[in-house]
Length: 342
Image 1 (cartoon, helix red, strand yellow):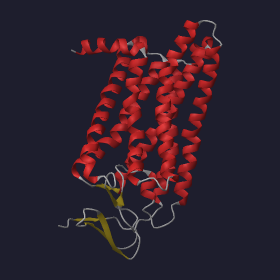
Image 2: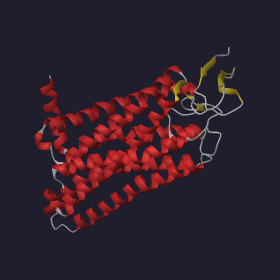
Image 3: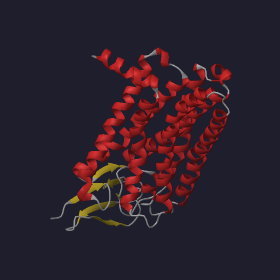
Image 4: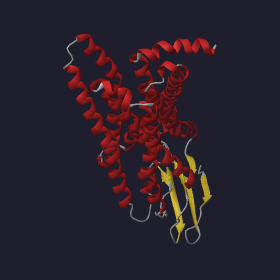
């Protein structure tokens, strides 16, 4: 039995109609009849290619991870907001990270689960661009918050006498504004570069969410500029953040090893341990997915798509768990908050 998806698009010059067919084999194909290229269109998100029959099972761990991310990060934000003793730079940055994690996972997971449960989902061109913008912007802001947390730990351990001077309340608010401004400034050109493309081929995106190169590769005209900008922007933002974070923790570890007291060294390692775990989880998954997606020509497509989902979902899930276990102040205040809520 054939099911036909029929939808109209905004025209760049003349009439263009795209008709999707589901073949007897169950795979999606597309036939396009047009004489010129369209400028605005709609996209069909298919989920994980090659694993369509298993997506209902894949949705179970993803649903569980999403619930953990929302509940865990919600508790972190509530604890920091509830206890005035935690209104310090370290915990305020942690609350910012938790908020970013909730937003990032919410941008991708609900729509992804609908695809897993109900099948391919149609997304309008503006909706797809909006999701793309927030996915990339929130990813960049996550990296920026991790950098701010590394700087906080560097000042606290390496130059403790200047901590109160450098990290005042006004500094925290400026950091928050700066990371939002950086994300918008970096991601907006990527969206504008998508708008210059013309789409006249398949409107099918073999993915669970809209992302920059997934949309650009469907264009009729060259998307080389999109690829170059995406790679350059990633290296100059996330890549530079990682270099600065690595430098910060190298200086921190060098200072810690010079401490005369074993107790002081243990306390310093305990303070930084949670941050290092979170950073390793975030950047390892992100860089592995980023480079395999661009240079792993022999990597199966379903592996690339699963990695692209995991590097956005695993850190929001793990962050509250890591900080809940490693950060004594957060761990001790959660029961008090829960009892007060009752």
